[in-house]
Length: 268
Image 1: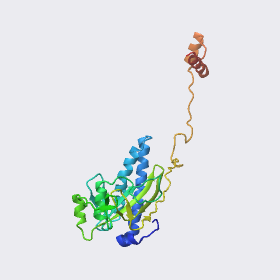
Image 2: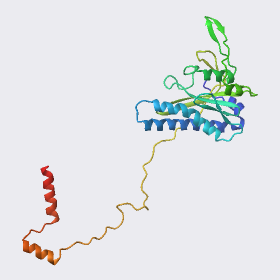
Image 3: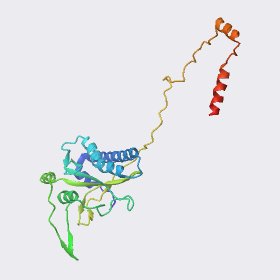
Image 4: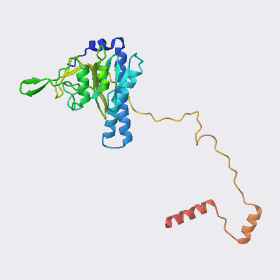
């Protein structure tokens, strides 16, 4: 199942295959960075903020980098929910996170509940979609296809009909640990998948996120640089010295004042 097979991607994307693959990989790495940045700012032991950032950025960042390629016909397709899907070379890209504990690569089942939008995408754009459920043991029935929302219904009218490419990935607060892409059919209501295209692993190398502490430039003046200023010492006038002798007052020095202040401080 995990054997690399790039024939399907070349058939869909042609000469743009490597460029689109690179954009998807960069989009996932950007999603990771956004998730970690939001978690750091949230200052919370919970992962709600991080999960929200990952869930939205997985669509936005992949779409952003694919759109930046400037491939003719690339556009965003609204699907009536909080995200939009990018359509490139007549193919919809759908990224989603898979279980990070039980497996290290895509399994043969959708990782969560089959939502209406997911059912519509598989039904309209999946390869050889075969949605069947058992009404009685051993008896298969084929329920009617779900009604497509307006944006997807219009897309399904295109000839040839667009394809659907799934982008499962493994990501948590320690980083992005794996990503793949491929085509699959949804076999039943329980979410079993048939990976028709032998999914292909993506390259998701993770550059270091360590930030170096900036060092001051040697050519830039700082507060303790330069020559010490020359300060003239003040002296008492002849009149002051004559007045002190007449009053018979002791001459107070800086040391005397310091010791007096220290004594007062110690009393408190």
